[in-house]
Image (cartoon, rainbow, N blue to C red; front, side):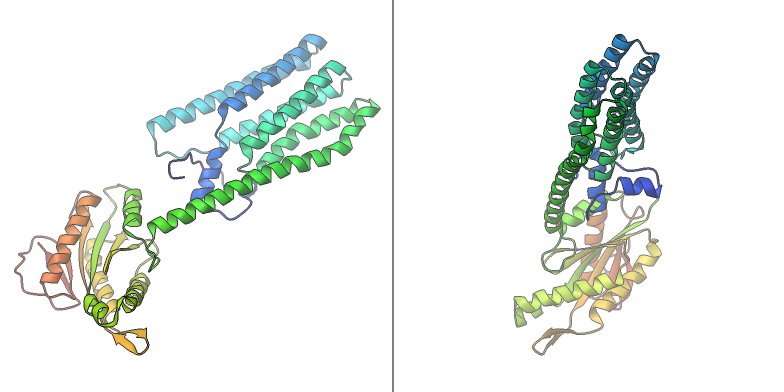
Length: 398
């Protein structure tokens, strides 16, 4: 899904939001994927325009009525508009691969085109011309399938397009004065119900597929024990962060002090419980935009966004205190204490890329361990042999 086409709805109108909302629970990424499906299959849209144009031209030739001249002009204008919109979108996507296109122009053209087909069908059906009525009925029935297939990602919108085509056709049949064509009226509700069933079936299948993909992705990017990000999840999150050099970014490498002794003394089950408790305390000290990952063993990583470098040091102090201040009850009367050492670096002050930032934070962590553990160190230029800093206080490291 990450490499699949995505789109957005630019308008904030509540009616439009409702019209294109999925009928079921879906994430924001899934919603963008569903909207992207509405921009697919341009060839099917163009083929539909060509078929409609043939029917309108046939009606003009057979009847000579000027209204069909107007329909031909409108059909050509809408076809040209759809081609231009498709070309403009593709050209921008070529130059800006990360651009997420809006569907507004495309879906408006689709709605106008279906309105035109309904108007043509009403005009033909009400004129009592058997040959043209057969052509019109064939066209409308042929259009319903592609409309359902192209737009099932937005079921309400798909049904609206079907109604724009079909209801004027039914009204034209009733207005023709031919009694037998009145049979189309009782046939319409089951026909529309069948179309809606097809749309909803496709839509539910897509939602189930998206949910399965998101569950798989979540399992792949989150630690099975603590529920926070794992190494792969953190790598992915860092890759998704904006590269604007004006934005502040700090990365903390976190390592527990004394975890091995707990693991050796009380077993891996106690160690796992301790890791879960530590992750909970760390998460409780972070903001909603901060990232927390377990990189393996008793190593954690934290990414702090939009925070000035002089505020990261006090934050490291708080994290150290949160982890080490209170003992951990692991159950069965087992109570233990662990400390934590933190090394951090800031972007763009200490590094020029996320890769370099991680290396700098790791180097600062080694310096924190060397300084006596239980401290926070920022990557910097002070000598490695600088006096050890008191626990729960930070200083710049080499």
